[in-house]
Image 1 (tube, rainbow, N blue to C red):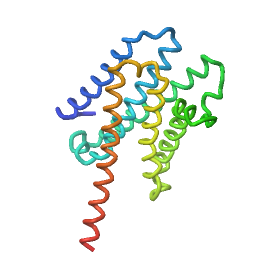
Image 2 (tube, helix red, strand yellow):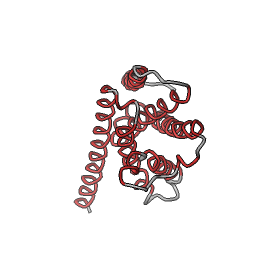
Image 3 (cartoon, rainbow, N blue to C red):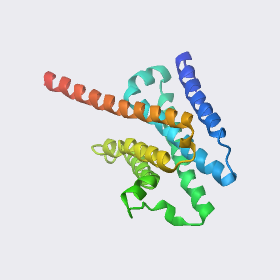
Image 4 (cartoon, rainbow, N blue to C red):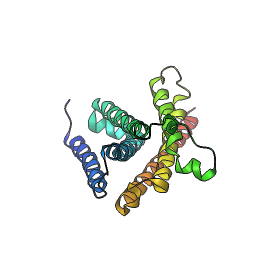
Length: 204
């Protein structure tokens, strides 16, 4: 798999982001192995999803930079993110010996948002399944895939309310910036779709 200089720079920037997140993570040392994987799974999962979602509006530009390997790069971040966000609750469930940690809590408004990572995980899996079935549900798969942006918001709120790492100003600031950028790219993508439809109407 060959990459251009621009592609290598982009990959390097993404790796630096993961390294920076890991350094910030270590500023609050994990108490045990469970804490290590629970916290790192959440942070790396969010970071991977952020990278994957921000790629979407720039598929044409990135394809020119990466060529065919671009699709593989997008899938790598998506799959790695899926593994990490799954690791987070799985390890937590093992640590507390309670499978109910996967079920959304609707006992109160506050409880729902404190544990918003639970519905976020469900939403992420729906988005991933839609991507897998995109050839069979051509008209609808993008709608379900867009739910990943909602999952990011849910995961962010969950982290802010009860996340250990979000007490770190560096983590809080960085992940807030990532969320804002991700939402911004979604708006830009919708704008692209709107302008493309307008051009098609003018030509017909």
